[in-house]
Image 1 (cartoon, rainbow, N blue to C red):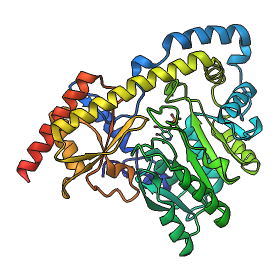
Image 2 (image 1 turned 60 degrees about the vertical axis):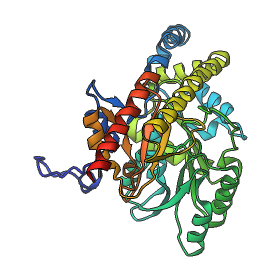
Image 3 (image 1 turned 90 degrees about the vertical axis):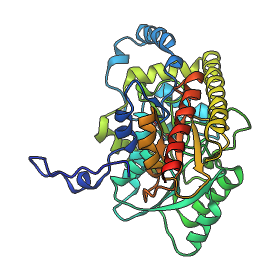
Image 4 (image 1 turned 30 degrees about the horizontal axis):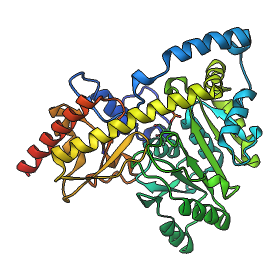
Length: 403
Ligand SMILES: Cc1ncc(COP(=O)(O)O)c(C=O)c1O
């Protein structure tokens, strides 16, 4: 296990039960470890720093302050500024009304808010196995019963979910990352989106479809969102992967009956998302020519880097690993070819060799180490990716010769 629970043993005042039982983020713990300059880290999930639009944001900041004046620095509505809600509704399409959109402090907050307004302790939540670590983290605070259902390269196995529902499972919420998922890179197939929507209507659960990576498509076409097929879906989105994660601007689109409780919960959490940042995101999304060119540049860079990493890994340690196809997003999912290759143990050896990744166990509710690994290819250049693959090959080589 990579994450650690707070024990509370050293605190002068006892922490709440939740605080003592919730695991800290394995990725955060790990990133701390991999800040050493000698380590090539494929562990983070960060956008390429050189592609963050510093100049465009500087110009937009000047424009927004000139146009909005003090209003851009004032308190704002909890739901988000009207202009950004309208822009997001427009981009989401499928009949989304601005009133159904809530601007959140990153999509992480959207996930937290949806969980908090829907879940009581013990309520059943279904997630794909493996799934986004931050979702497991957010859900934990509501103390639900988490049921993991296998996924494959087409996303959540909705046939297995249907079997479990037929056998009596009654989830309140099903969470999926629809496109180029974190951690597997899988995309939920069109037919499975329709199937999932039908199951939501039949069995009365909410589908939370999280889509931070959909715009980063290297090839193929985009399937319609689950929300196109059911009124029981909440769609999460974010500016983090296509503009800047530091701005902390995300959003959700929810059915009417969920919007009010979510807004009330958000009000108690942070009153509203930073107004200036909302204006900046709105300005950049509304500048279609700039935004499309910017996303195209991200796609070009990430798809080239993914290609380099796949090829370099094939050469350095292809006999040890199966590599999932990468059609978009930021991650390569790696499976061991031979049982018994523990990714957590490999990580310790790999860090000594100067390369880091995230073991698949971090993305599983049961934290089982099945030897899988998530490699992020966005922040290391081509030479670095070649070297990272070489170091990983050396690490796995030294492990397999010592077992
Ligand atoms: C699947 C998924 N959902 C949500 C988030 C949170 O993104 P943010 O809060 O920056 O919008 C991430 C970040 O890595 C993610 O991978």
